[in-house]
Amino acid sequence: MCPPFSISTQGALNENHRGRHVATAIPAGSGNIHADGRPDSKLCMGGRLLDLGTYMQTAAHTELAVWQTTMLAEGIDPHSPVDYRGYVNIKLRTAELLRRFRGSAASCPAWLADRIQEVADEVERGLETRNLAAHGAFFLDDPGKGTLGAAHYFARGQGRDRELFEIKQAVTRQQVEDAIRAGNQLLHSVIALRQAIQDWRYPNGTPDPSPLPTCEDQRDTQ
Image (cartoon, rainbow, N blue to C red; front, side):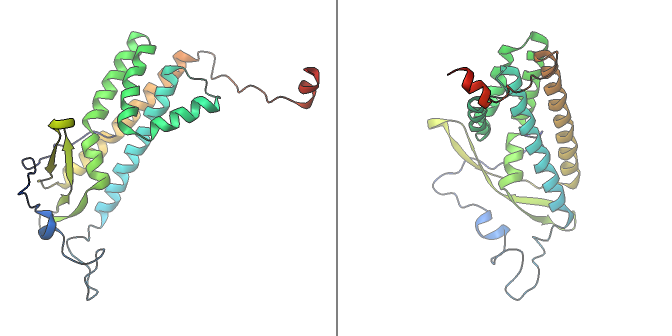
């Protein structure tokens, strides 16, 4: 859940399409080592893997904060195992989580509802970029320029309008750095929103969990 850079694709795939990634982008072999033991220059991305990990962890923490913000906005019992389990199921489905996050605005005053919608819009714009970062097979597209390519596909549309698209672009180092910076800004925005909703929902602080019943309590009810 991080802001995007512009993703370019080829036209929708059809029955005659042969992907450029099938044989041309990634040389045969396993991992990033050739059969003779030489490292594959296209797959030795060095510090780019650290950049990718930074971006993905930023997105993961943004998703966690969005999930927590949704629970606070909807006002669930923070100590109910049943409520909590239900929200865990929501977190496992990104599209459902974003839908619930948007819908939680209805439970908040207008000034918070507007901020929820703004953040939700920004998160939605970044879903394809996060999907590419998580599932794309990256390689050095042009070692001289330091640009990255990625073998990956997207599905866009629903039902009969659903079409498949192949990634067709080179990603520059500047785009990667910009995506990380924007992702970090989004994470801070979600954290600030979470705090604002918590302060509104629980002006006197988050309630403590109810104490567990004691043996004395059980004897009193008998």
